[in-house]
Length: 188
Figure 1 (cartoon, rainbow, N blue to C red):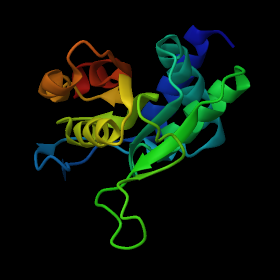
Figure 2: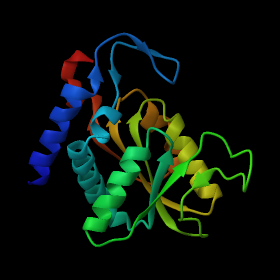
Figure 3: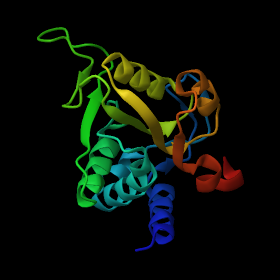
């Protein structure tokens, strides 16, 4: 399957199975006429394989040793990209950023094997709206010693998230597999 046909297939899966057309309140607190539940596709084996491959193709040039993001939105994509990297002959471990530090044990914010000072990492999320989840993931990865080389989302809702991350990303690239316009056209 070519990259173009893989992208077309993933778009079809997202439109058919992840886009919910009803009025909802988003995690940002804003109301929207649609919701994208990307996990409906990312947790399916076909959707996982497609998103992992397409995501890895964009992130591979950044040469990460680990990929992670804020749990739960990032979890399926972390696993899919790590598996795609492995299929490509690269060991890229996964990590999950907790929504709050553990209250017991080592009281960690991050779960996963990447944590060595200077480890090149990329952060991911399923949907970008306000940028809050990616911001937390970037900040926590850096606090843990990671060298954040890039970020990737499956869908950029084009609602200011990219712009709100400019201060933490700087020149670090932020890729989106799709924008809301690419998924929904003028129906947004």
